[in-house]
Amino acid sequence: MREYKVVHFSEDFSMEDINEAMSSQDEILYFTRYIQEKNEFHIVKHKNGDFKITSFITQLFGFYKKNKNTSSLLDETKVKGNDSFVIIQNVNEQLIERLKNDLNILLKK
Image (cartoon, rainbow, N blue to C red; front, side):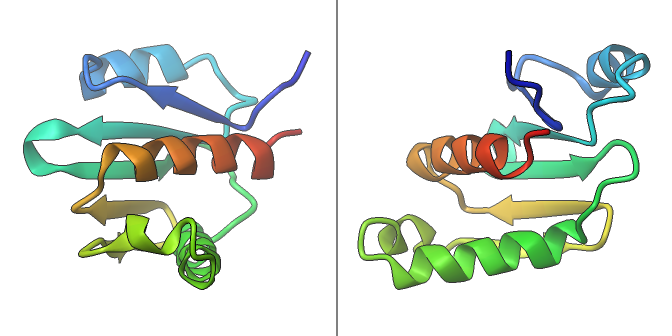
């Protein structure tokens, strides 16, 4: 069985729901959530994550930009954040799915 360091919450979860669910999840280092009304995808450090998450995502996006199959996913996308969280603005469904998949692969134990 694969054990991931990241868990993805649907937009149906409130921050209260997420905090409750994550309170006993010490092995999970990051969580993601999509906020539809703002068209934002958030990646948040839950525990002592190994990466400065904004730098990590910026480098991942650099890789996407060099690939003709993924470069168009980044049109009008903006990234902001710090060491504890990243907010990706103007995301589309394809980018979200790609990020979730890549985070699962890159951040698994």
